[in-house]
Image (cartoon, rainbow, N blue to C red; front, side, top):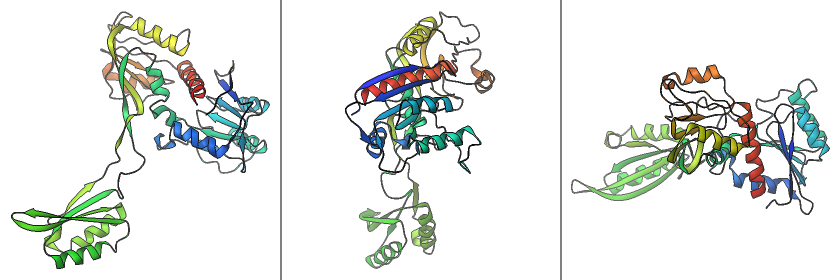
Length: 360
């Protein structure tokens, strides 16, 4: 558990805020701290295109006394972290997104890596893993809307299949002699698990064979079964899916228990995010008194997450107005549309990081 002094350090440059956790009484090994962070929000929840986790690691062992949190790790923020003698920087957005071909003093991202390694500072980024987590950024945003039920717009799936393999092959076998030959043959194929059970079809005793196999093994299994018309005509191939995770995924579709006016909802959002203003775009024929019952939200740009989601109000982070109008042209005459840009995302991530730090 992390508990001690926490200070919110406001920064006036680039709307960046930093949070510093400094423990005077305890420290944690980097690996142990990473386990705690992963327990809070597994990196497997991140989008496939994202670059999350420990991006820069000092040579072990590495003890973390001071944890520095920021929305974006710039060179200026790095200097502040070094002044505060940070041992690990948790940057919501990954400062390293694409692979670096070399580490020189030429670009600012390369300089970040050099400065971190020179000063034995680790860099960790959770990004979309924190967006998707049940207690993540999007769920935190939903809490500011009022009493409502919410669900992910794009639910996450479990990182692993519930059983071995990605496919299941099922077929029936008549007779003990054929059964022994088939089981012996399929067991010689790598990445195949075999189960069998007795069945009765048309008053005939049969043995049902069920094979769980990988994509590569499936080709070999089908090639074997195709040698026998008896087996192949009775073969069923099922594609296994990873199970959905409850309350986990990108974006949130929130249905309020009671409708409120747009003006009331805006006040709630500003109060929750501690903002003095937000940016607003009204749908045709809508006013500040128009009712809001369903809200679709996404802490990031939301361009792909919110597409196709039907709601009265859209709450997003930084996004091009032109891109938004292009993505949702069919929504223009009907729903209210609310877009907040950099100030929303920065404030949301700052307040969220501060809140989880107090819980850990």
